[in-house]
Image (cartoon, rainbow, N blue to C red; front, side):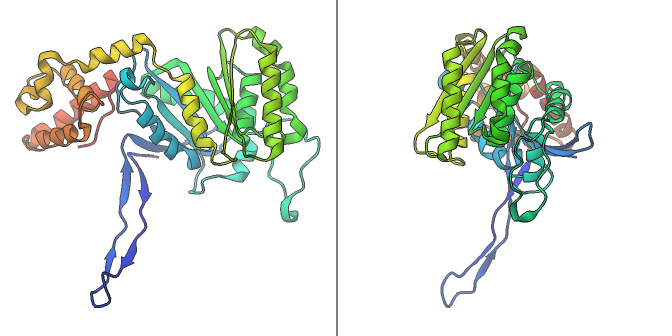
Length: 382
């Protein structure tokens, strides 16, 4: 199932104006996050997932958009999609590329789905010392990480690459907590699955630090891998001592090894604890992997320079006289930080289209959608 936007439900409240005045009820209204959608997708094993997608307002770079796949999408997709949208605007000015953000989540509205994530994020190995089950209840099953990684590689990534202009050489995985453990597992055992791996507050402790066995085998895996691997480990300096200690120890071992073919970053974030670290860590990770090159910056400067067509930003007749491709260029420039008020441009554009004869509106909207997707400019609903 596909929906055109992700809605956040605002709380409704009955607010008394004063003692004598009649209380007015403010009805709840959905808030749509532009450029987002959510789809349902099933794995080969019949497990259902929710796939959250956010596309940038900026045009795609010459090689296509980079993409970051975020685990625990129910909880982390919305804040990270908004962060990516803000920091990736105007790459020639901000120095960061716009990126597609894909959240991998589960049916339902809970931010974190303990049973499903425990299965998906843990490797298929015997438990050395099963943890005590809380309240005497059966412990969540473990060991689904290979199936989950196959799902990402064979179902989610091909779907995204088929529909959006994606730079297949700049694809990142971001996981937090058990998701961070999964990111380490993927980097150490299957580094061909992504180019960038972000393991934030990784649960290295799981199964008596089993992932350190994968770390020991990593040099042999890396030696067979073609291309470079980029690994970023982050932890909150205020987390539990064993979380910080495990991350520090692993980071020191990896840094000391100086592996050929590995770009490694480790950051302990001052003042952050287990949950609060996820957002600043995402921003730092984004900075590290999606920096705009000088070639990228030059291409954006050229794209925003409309020359004599700049009058089409303000004038409907001038706009509709342009070819569909040049109209798409005007929309890119109008929605970028090069324009003092991108929202005003879109309001103006909607008004121009609304003023067209009814039979022409649908054709124009279809043309816009076609050329926006062809040139890497996100369509705006009218």
